[in-house]
Every structure is written in structure tokens, then in C-alpha cells.
Length: 148
Image (cartoon, rainbow, N blue to C red):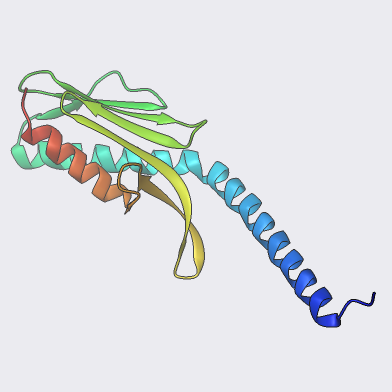
């Protein structure tokens, strides 16, 4: 039996698409691995920036950093001593946020943005991309507004 050029060309085209897809997956995995620590540092910086701004605007210490480490940022609320913990789980590329009334999880994912791959924090509940500043601002706002 003689196979048509059309069938062979279609097969080879599919094989090329599969190879490109596999290569893209490897590149995205490497990008996530290489950018994870830096993105975590950026996110911590946004939280710390919010704390500085709030305390400056209030003219007193409303939030203070407490018992933080390289993979964990802990903020203490002055009015009642409640704590907000933001933890980086580098092996899973995830950030978890816990406080008395807050439970949020974000995962560093690689998504296509404007034709290019970009590392973004994705809310694990809504699957929405969240910029660093938006994460820090919304979580600190919720932490300050809900007293236990």
C-alpha cells in the first residue's frame, strides 16, 4: 500500500506541534523554577511597602513585622496582637496567607501575556492572575478591617 503525501505531511506536522508543545512545557517549567525566589522577594517587598505606608500615614505603628524568615513574612496587628502569616512553599511554587479570618493561596504560574510567557501569581480559588501589589493591598486591607 502506498501512503499519500497528504497523510504523511499531516502526521509530520502533528509530530512537530507535539515537539514544540513539549519544548514549551520544559521552558515554562524552567522559567518558573528560575523566577520563583525573585517573585517571592518582590511580593514580600510589596507587603513591607504597604506596612510602611500604613504606619507612616497613621503616624504610629499599626502593623509590625514579627518573627519573619526567608520563606515566611509575619505581620502583627498592634490593636490586638493578631498575626498575618505569608509563607512561600518553594517546592510547590505557592504562597499561602493565613490570619484569623483569612485563608488565601496563590501559585506562581507561567501564562501567556501579550504574546510572551510571564510568571504570574494565580489565585488558586478563582484561577485569576493577581499582581503583587493587588495581593498585598487586598490582604492587608482585609486583615485591618476584620478584628477578632
